[in-house]
Length: 66
Image (tube, rainbow, N blue to C red):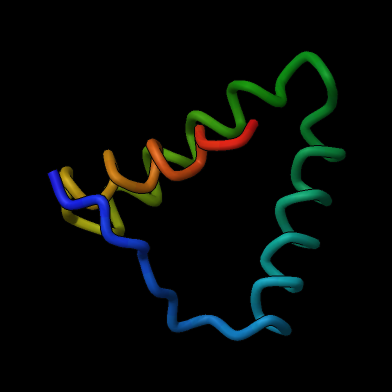
């Protein structure tokens, strides 16, 4: 598996906007639905990405340093 760092086309400002959108969605979903929202979002993003190995690499990157 490729363990090279992933690069992103998003700059800091865009990442901050994405973070804000996600935070608002988590707040809107509420504590009982947060996990469901995040799973649905992950599946939609995996579908949009269209690359199972790249998605697996992103999951591993997200798990680091939790």
